[in-house]
Length: 161
Image (spheres, rainbow, N blue to C red):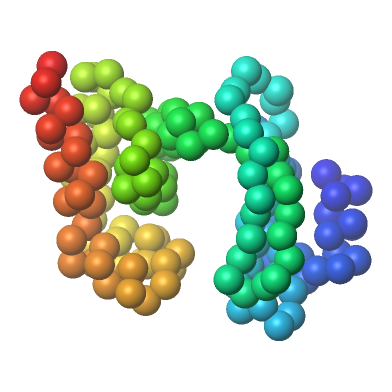
């Protein structure tokens, strides 16, 4: 952790660095780019589906080849995270993945729990917690519509059980 943190400081503004229980978390920024990059590295080496992907940004012409989770694996991880910590950002990520065509790999009980978690979010969660993570246009959509798209998918899946 310390070696990575110091290495990032050489070329970037390090805006966050945490040695969490399951992951190492770094957030970096480099002028003149307007956005920050969040890097999360899992400590444990558990069986997962990976693929090589090219990472790019509309703010730069640099591209990087990464080994990353498949979208299906990412969905499994996000569902597990949501059921464990009940964070609105995990719901946003799950809805994002469903919009990309990734199937929600959850059973009836899990879908019911996910539905309960979503219904339990309050206005403040959408305006402050989620709102602070999103660009203006997307923020306004979620303030108005919350997670109606994802709830529709969950309700449809539940009707098949």
